Image (cartoon, rainbow, N blue to C red):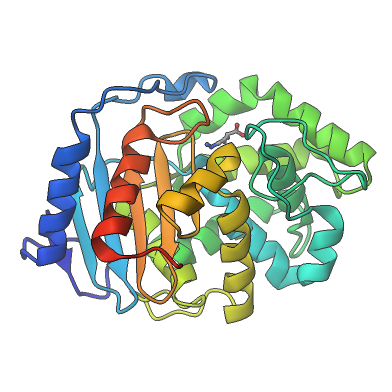
Length: 317
Ligand code: DON
């Protein structure tokens, strides 16, 4: 395990009681062998089912980690809250809300969940996230991905790069996402070209991260939009709150209710096996373990966050 309090979210060898807790949690969840590594994106199928990493970053920017804290994986759905935050910063909540709802769908992440107004139910499911990406304009769709990459890098406090193989693998096979994009176009809520939105969505999902990156990203939301490691204000306090609110109700898909009960802090999972969770005012946490449960959430990741929430009394209620 590692701890550091430098400006860089990179580890040193210093021992700390938090690291001891993270190491104990790693040892506790390691024997769990349920779940399956995602293979609907062919390039993800080769992930090591035994890999496990966990990191926590405090609101003061102290970084703690245990396990495979240097393992790289793609951010996948964990990109969704941050692109939602970008869209809100650019256009304001009311405008964004005309295009995508904020109700838990109670359905899988890739479901056709559109409300009576033609909007995807929320920005954490694929349908809503593709619409959110379409809303990020900046200087126009040219260069949109670069703006998204830059924003997610500011949340992480380091320059994130694209995993070209995972991107191409999803671009070749992600036809269901294209279909979701066309339904939103038909509903009048997706802006511009579906293919361009979907391509940028596939790219944002294929940004490569570590558990430390996830923890810093979550800690930035938990700290009201200021990255506690770099000191940079990335989004407004209000935008950070909107983002955490939607993560609370919709971040864990059709397990959002049980998550609220057992963990009780806003979180977002991804099919690569990562989960990021933000305890407002105190901690950002990142976990990685590829085998997923039936809802597409990491089995060991969920178990680890239940333990951590218990140990540090992170539950908001
Ligand atoms: O669009 C997809 O299906 C993937 N790029 C991301 C899905 C995902 O991470 C769902 N999370 N559990």
